[in-house]
Amino acid sequence: MKKLILLFAIVCGIVDCGLAQPEYTYVDNIKNIKLYPYGNQIGYPILGLNSGDKMELHFDDLDGGVADYSYTYQLCNADWTPAILGQLDYIRGFVSNRLLTYRNSSVSLTKYTHYQAVLPENNSSLSRSGNYILKVYANGDTSQLLFTRRFLVVDPKAAAIAQIQQPFNGQYFTTHQKIQMTVNTKTLDLVNPMQQIKVCILQNYRWDNAICNIKPTFIRKNELAYNTEEDCIFPGGREWRWLDLRSFRLQSDRVTHADYRKDGTDIYVKTDLDREKQPFLYYQDNNGRYYNDVTESVNYLWQADYAKVNFSFRTPDGHPFDGRDLYLFGELTNYGLDPEAKMIYNADKGLYETSLFLKQAYYDYSYITVDKAKPRSDFSHTEGNYWETENSYTILVYYRSLSDRADELVDVTQVNSITGRQGYSN
Image (tube, rainbow, N blue to C red; front, side, top):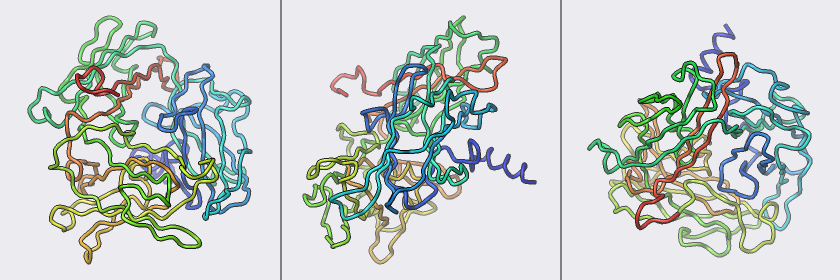
């Protein structure tokens, strides 16, 4: 019975990769988790196999003090199910390490301990390409998970060429973006390309709306062509909203007021309105991600403070959405996975409300609705969808030889929707 329950959970996406969700925070005291390429806070952690690439891990423990925290890696297949391999098959050296670099906060009203690491460490490198999950756990017990985060390791054996087009289908012409691409597989030993090659496309590094298991339209010798009006189309969305919290004292344009207490700060953000029918306006954003920074301290890692940040959203008629839930969306809520991401309707005020405990940073965010009957994120009722929106797309190409037991990641190609478009720059 336990095996059947576990199988059902994996199929439904409830658990993944060794009884852990690919990206989730399991405890309340861990905040501001960041995993990114070395030196680039708004980048996505993608490492080249045997390349010497590094990524940074940062997080805060609000319990303070010094705790026994460790980490390990889990290799997964293209669909994020666990690879049927032992850790020694893809990790050279130690399969787990303790987090030994930490520092207590200073200056800030909120007390915390900041942990950080540069990964992979010299005593623990990765020997295979593919999808990986970083697991951080307590007291040397892998069942005491603190959080998990995804990252990718690529071994470039294939090459994709892609461009963003406006769909021909009148239903999507003004609201969606189409990815047309070809994948060159000349260095791969292919017998059955339809079975051995898997392609996945991410919009702004999001996995909640990733398009995967795409089948090629044509196969020409060593080239797979993907060009349909249905398979590789994403809603365009709109440029993300922003919130500058690099200073709590100097309030930015998106803040109405702040309450300063001896033991903390409450920030009140201006009520957000529906942008669905507003004219499209292009401006540079961080595509839903945030970066920590301070304007009045020296070090944003352990001198930045936290505040309770209050968000509110008003629908056009002041009434709640019918049959839909509203979520605060972006990296700041782990793309809707955090419990506080769901907004609660306040009938007395005619507003949706939620609050997050956030560290000083510059944030991008949006609002999405989710149909209660058919759970699926949707910008069309809060932000609108526009073909002109600037979006970053990541094309992932996976390969599995006929004798292998895990998917390899053999190409990562980045393409931007405004590259080459007249009048735009990124």
